[in-house]
Length: 376
Image 1 (cartoon, rainbow, N blue to C red):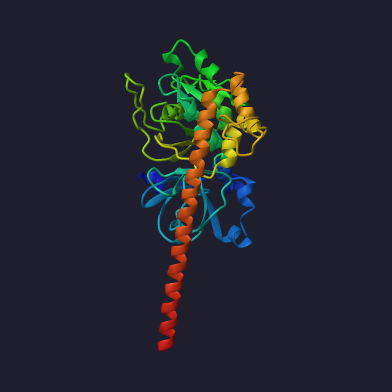
Image 2: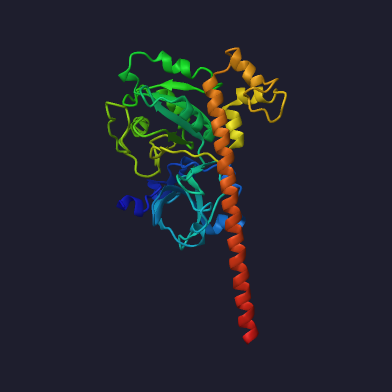
């Protein structure tokens, strides 16, 4: 851990005032620069305003987390009730309240948005990031370009209520770009920006997504240039980068953990490891929004439980037959719907099992206390 993350950086500079006396001059609004908004301010009680200090989670490690607040950056050990519940554990982007004197975490503030996925091979969700404003869905102009994967990311972004933009990287490595734009033309109101992530001038159109006080996440598979893009937006080397394999355009992992980076005169950028698996659960609304054209047609089908195959009066099938709807998108929509339903059921069963176990523990504990009190 670097010393700069353990010590606190001063937020004030000294200057002369009337009478030659020095006074503290606030050179910035540190909390707002870290993404502090009225949504979070309104959650604080009067006592908390006096006794506590809000801090933003910048990175999460196994035994400690890095946070940043009005007094700079510091490290907090991961222990106590706040870190026991899986769904309550702080994730990157969260806002925590610390006691001003002890620096112990008091509670986590309600999130304005949350990104999560089904943990690979598990029956529970894995938190990705919280309180994100904008998302760049990053893919590259090579073998990595995959519409079905983009739709998966888009459903996740829509569920979180964030603004999305598709970024096509490595534009300098190909001569023909139109095929990629053409493939994305059916996505309503979804901005598409073509960039060379190594060229800072090329990424200028993306700066509107990382203005001061805004938090921007970069999502995409390994090797598409997320870390390179982050460095170009920041104007400095914040994240390590590596090349791709020439034979299949597969990327190498360079980002080891999720972290927020503050950029000069701008907002905060989230860099995250490429995710080979992005299981979806509990994102029904986001899925409907990502496939809004298909959802609207499905609502017009004669039967409410239409499978959109051979049923009479199927508006989705009719649109496909008339070449007004891409069959691949329909197949992916149905695939994701089945996945969300299956994973949501798994989560519901897991939660029910956890509740039953908790009730059993409380019951056994109560009986033990009753016997103990009876003995006395």
